[in-house]
Image (cartoon, rainbow, N blue to C red; front, top):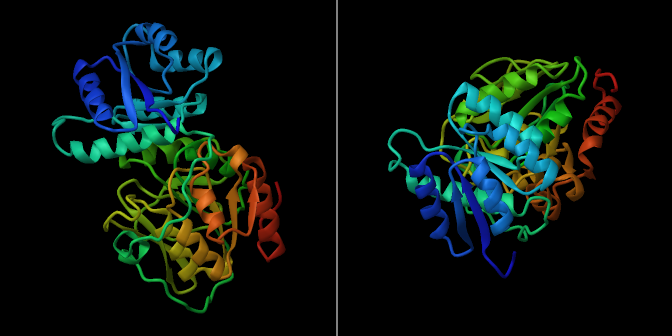
Length: 362
């Protein structure tokens, strides 16, 4: 797709949404909307005729449910799919099921006043279309210098300190394709695992549903992180979509801190912020994991973790949906070991045991 435009087919029952999506896509030099279908049945014929590179698919539609269509599509003609979801409990549940079925990523559907914030929405959706188009294809650019105003420095400084606790922490960052990758890691952790903190690029209306869903699947307790709560072994804390997640100390205890400051690397929560916080507060007692995702968020933070004595793991290219964030972290020199997704949980526990963690092996 380097020398041609990304062909996008929009599937949505709303004529207004189809029109808006078409306008947003066609403004970009590297993509074009080749068609817009009101339902999956029309979309099926348009896919055959237009051979799109990316499909944007509404979650809830008439004539055929979005999930039913996606399941059939992935069985008969697998292709990159970006889900467009409503900000409802039902919408989020269906979205996570869609990701399990093979959708690459999702974006929230514009609500109420569609003109408000459309420029920001246009940037977000076109970025996600680009990431979806290159799913499982390594086309990331070389590491770039991070401008200070967009770096983790706007949220907290990088510091050097002594660590007064030996309690271990597992720190995870992910973006595109991350929901399934995070699930793969967390479901393999035992109930007595060290505490886990996760920054996944996700809208705020979805992070609680994501945490609740994981909580039904994992041996550890999974929840959306709250401000100023004690970080406990056997628990995983998912950064809420409206805040950066940081670690602080209260005596010998690790505590959570939520910060609604500016976007870092165009994200909140930012992986760089969480990783830097772990480097500052936990140092060698933290283990960092960077999973599939588009862009470079987490690159600098993982390097800082490694320099602070943390062991760091990156997901390998073959198992990534998008080998962007791990590639950037590896190229920057911030990664101790590169592993396929299915090996990360086991290796994490083996390493932590070897350095004094009480967690049992899988």
